[in-house]
Image 1 (spheres, one colour):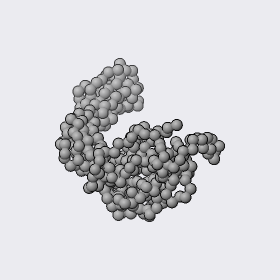
Image 2 (spheres, rainbow, N blue to C red):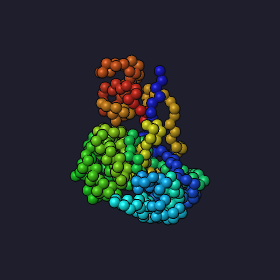
Image 3 (tube, rainbow, N blue to C red):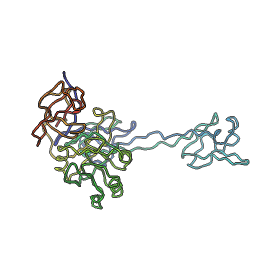
Image 4 (spheres, one colour):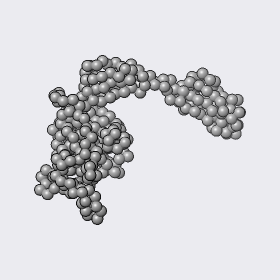
Length: 355
């Protein structure tokens, strides 16, 4: 039987190509071959403003056909947020105010529509690299050479900053005492994020991001609302960072890194990533993940407890292994550095590591 598993890239040097697209058709401000920095604006697009439907009849407490006698505005009129749209006197005065600024574009059926003016949206490069391709009126493809670590969880934020290693072990959590004024503007590296006070301290110190192995379940909601990117190499849970990821990030301590905490659709569609731009470029093109089954000699990472985060080499297949819980599942033997006895792991608790 063949097993096609999720694949993760942990590479000290590769080429990454990232698309940066405008929210609509617009103007591209760079050309193919230009070198760009993360904060550089690569394009601008005009997007329609938001609109609101105000139920005047309901707010005034009158029939829909009676709304017009209480109106204070007319179609085509510009209003500011808080302006009076309609008012009714009586024992209890009722006033309808504009929820946003814009133009009154329609009145009817007891309702009123306000449309905000169009907005100019600027899209920044997000990565330091070279414009590999210009997508006419739509965006660009930026090529970056450097280290790449694909992660398992992120809080949907993007950012960049200088890496700052705060722990000397992949198992150690970030603590409040580690985060001081010297951390301002940096990306913190730790083993685990399990302390809400440490997260609050990082927010107060205005750090640029956090990289950990795992985020404690009770902190996921708060981490998702942080004003900077947070990525977990191993995923939700109090899981230490894998030795390979920790060693690689430790090597690049003090270098600038880009954090992309966006993810969707599980492991194979959109993955959170850490990119450490480097001056050297590999001799080959972008890393392509082959659609190949698991085989002996592959480097794999364990994704679930009790060995979560361990990285090793597949030594043998045991197609009818019996686990401690009594179930029978296809398992493999995984040789992990510094361990004499190979680990016995269910196949579906693994992912293939590409570098």
